[in-house]
Image 1 (cartoon, rainbow, N blue to C red):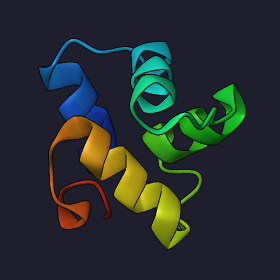
Image 2: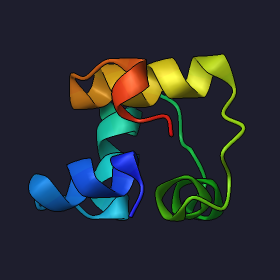
Image 3: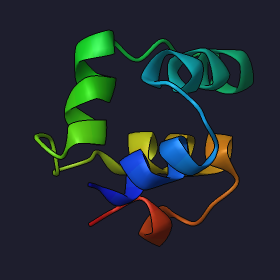
Length: 67
């Protein structure tokens, strides 16, 4: 389980919930496939802007979501 996956599970959020929260807060639509790869750990080379966006949306530090 990735750090991001654990945060979503602990908050009872789905990947779709995260996607909507990012869209609401940052007006950026991350694709389903990108979010899925980040949550499952397939995609580990985050672009800094996306890592900051996700961390800001979840009110955590970037280190809290990056393996």
